[in-house]
Length: 324
Image 1 (cartoon, rainbow, N blue to C red):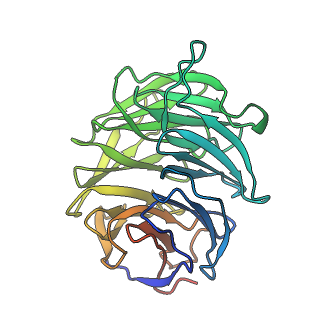
Image 2: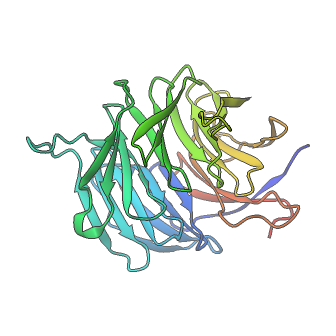
């Protein structure tokens, strides 16, 4: 089976440097962050810029959006974490994670993720642990707990599961850690990759996790509990075909497809059941740093739509042939 994805449109006011993160929200807007220090919100129907903030001095490296599409969490290169209210256009929370003190030996955040309930956010960085912080504007950034992996590896990415019960973290050495939030315990460690895992993404039902690595592969993990209460079986499929680092990945809302972006300047769409690539796009604007599916489930028979952000600073929308 093969699928065709058509280039629908580009954004009208691109970034001046590489786009390091994109998220398609349930309100049919796209949030993007860039190496130019800017964060922008675009209308997905027209590609027009609807809101933006003054650029930060350094690049923005991590982005997450809540399930209601009302708030965006983002992090700068040096570890300034901010919460942007997408309705009011105001920044309602800031936390300088690099500001160390005797009473709070902070770790500069590299990657951040917003709790689906909106009450906390997770961060990871140089220690290989995940820190849970308050996401309430009145106490934004305050430390709530620390989830230790037991390994002093750099945390490249962290993501809350959609059901809010777990946090996954990936490292620069190829490991992936799954933490249970209720018990604050490490549930599983997966050694699925030989090199840094740049990106991880959960399926919408919180049962599967996809990882994208510098070893040019993607790995699908089953993180469900078995009837005996033990964690899931880990890696259940590997997707190979990119010619360079895989920088980003996302699972479609219906759980059938994975989209990946690579330093080989291509975007691939993979069929999970068939374990194979069913579409390849080569004109994505240089290295593809970030990909995101449209959260709305596709119409029957349609493969859906996704958005990409690349080295050329442009946001590009792609729709499956026959998609509305």
